[in-house]
Image 1: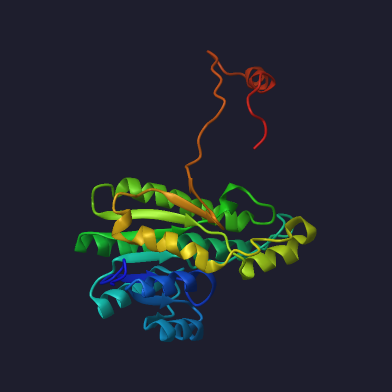
Image 2 (image 1 turned 90 degrees about the vertical axis):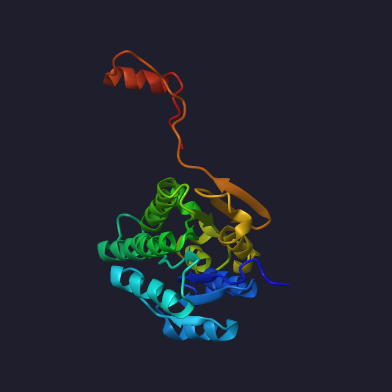
Length: 271
């Protein structure tokens, strides 16, 4: 039987290993013609060779690199039906020790890379009448120790997802996201950095367990779904909603004392 992505052309960034590789493998198994992108050309070629895909080593953190990647898919397959914005850098640092250049690079790859690839792909998808973008975010967007740069980048990715979905409503181009959980090199690095505070990160959760949600969002089965971020955590699937205000208090005129009184009266003071 044909897979749910039969006849589709799908780009997966950062697909030379880990989660991206898992997404690319399942997309190919479900019939997609896949472009495996990774700045590690050898890793991209290895995965592409095993799944009958095209390898690409474009640097998606630049506008030109993202354009080259999307153009490769269009040149080889004639169209781009799906984009999985998975490529990312993971760096840990206490704010007192944060290297500003490292912070900048995380944002360039994780946020700008997602934005650049998304913008090029969305324009191609609009021209052809439809498509699906899946952005990869993280629970770190809610605030995690030692992950300020990474969390900030992923919070931006979540905002991009919700905003693009609103922008593109009714066009045939859908934009969704996934917040995956798996025991990868990132989990190992987190444990090494935080020690006992981070033992057992995602133990037993494989990258492949997250791939079905991504392929679902790429497929026609999710034709009515846009502006959603799915969180996969082992055997649990949930939806991440946009931030919202809680505990509203009203007064006629705000003053410093009135704000203090609002907290004293029960306005939530913790996360």
